[in-house]
Length: 116
Image (tube, rainbow, N blue to C red; front, side, top):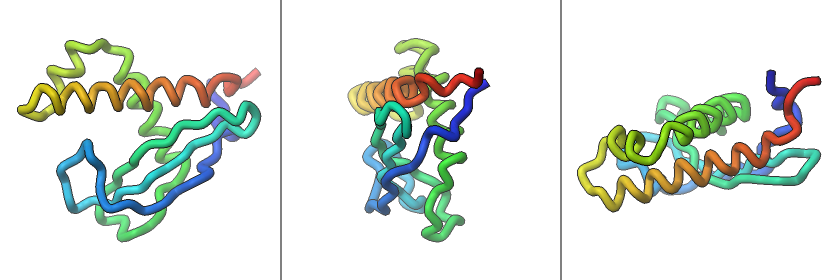
C-alpha cells in the first residue's frame, strides 16, 4: 500500500491550455508534485472538467490520475499509440512520450512511499 502523505503539490498555476488536449472547455493547470523526503519532483499540465469553475485541483485527485498514467505507461508503445484517439501519428507519438515522462516522474516521486 502506498502512503502518499509524503507527496505535496508545491506549485499549481492556471495556464491557458494543454498542448496534448484539444478540449477548450476544461481548466488547465501547471502542477509540480514533490516528495517531501527525497525532494524529487515532476511537473506537468493537468486538465480537469470545466465544471470545477477555476477551482484548484486537489492533490489526491491529481495523484490518482498520475497513478493511472503511470499504470497506462506500462502497457507498451504500440498499444498506447493505437489507443490514443488522434489521426496524426506524430501527435500520437508526442502524447505517448508525455505519458511516459509523467509516468517516470511518478515512479521517481513515489520511491520510498511504501507503507512499512
